[in-house]
Length: 416
Image 1 (spheres, rainbow, N blue to C red):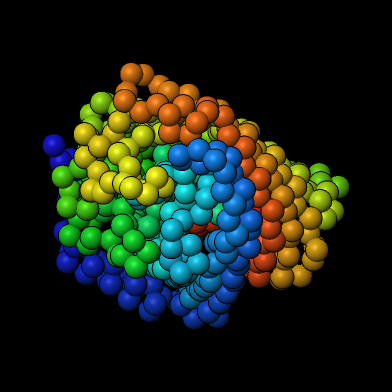
Image 2: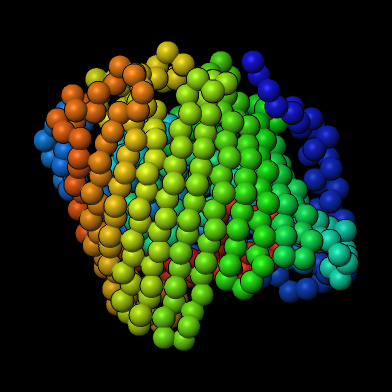
């Protein structure tokens, strides 16, 4: 049964235009506009053993090739991010345990327009008052879960990416800040993209919602709790199962002078088809930067659906229906890595890195899927080496469009 709040799009659009015109004509619009461009790409070679069907596979790929612009004028900010993974990894990136959008054991390519969000902050003009209201409209991340893996230390995406984030949706959202607390909420379309060039189905905007409460009691410390109801995410026509989701995480980022520290603890749960399938995840990761050296770790324990696969063992049948889920597996993955900054200062960052992952795969419940049959054994090794190149990509936090303090106090990670 479909649940959600249907948005009246013409009314929302008229309201948004009115707010924008009001802000542009306000005294703050006289402030000088600003522009912050950035770009990145990672060249990586990955060797994994086993892969679906058994044996091993090695691949060299260019991943996370993005260009972005953040701009501001008065109370308005624009975030635009282009991602060309549809050209560099059309068949996905070999990634242990990954799934989503029709890919399995490969991370899917993101859409070409990854983010395009216009946000308005302090729309009530009461910056010195007890509360501040922000609004956002466009395509991007719904307010749910912790930061996107692209802005975190480990190059390899976690299995829980689709449990802990809701990305590439057409959304309209609002955020209210009171002191150290920020409450965000958004309406969006439930459907996920089926290919890199696909846009959200605008007629479905409003069939899904999410909300996130973030509290920052101390500088560098952040806690969030999120809820979401997503209608038919993997069936574009809207006939697929719904998801009920929650996530909570704690994050720390700070420096003691000699070292820069980062840590994240995240717990996620997704229930599909009114509780017929439940997927849980616990993950912890951290890094320390000492001069040019950055060692990092991640430990993850995540359950994922095992869906009916096509003749390509890395792809699953779409559209997805309840009958396409053949079972559930639990992936326990330990990842360790090390990066070395060739250019520790300046706008251009060049970081060679290496990381290794060890995974244990366990069957959950009595489904038809058997990991021993599919992979030939129930453990896996993955090794990756590569070079990450970034230019001015130090401040952006994907999905934090409604946070009027996103660029201060809790600046985005440089990524791996």
